[in-house]
Amino acid sequence: MHVPPALDASNSDAQAIPEISVVVPLFDEQENIEQLHSRLRVTLDALGLEYELVFVNDGSRDATPGILDHLHERDPNLVVIHLSRNFGHQAAVSAGLDHAQGNGVVLMDG
Image (cartoon, rainbow, N blue to C red):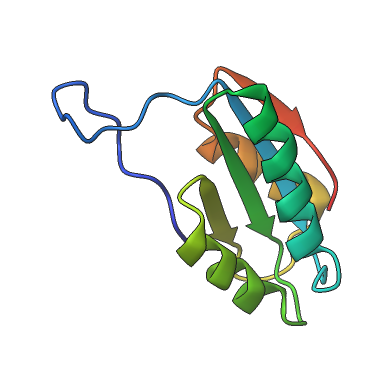
């Protein structure tokens, strides 16, 4: 599980608290993830806000985990949470909400 470092105002490298967190639970979404990620980035970048994307892998059995890890390597705004097995939609949403740091949170389905 990747969770961004704690914010420390005394650290000059600390990132600003995101204005928006977008939490997306995912289960076997290998066909959709890259396009979803791309569209969310384009939309949020256009708003000019600090944001984070919190993608929660709910025990996917396809290539979803690997795709998420690859996207995370390229995108510092992406937080990836891998659950150890499929716990269900609501548990995945709860995990995403627990890790979201934004002043506001948007929930989406993958």
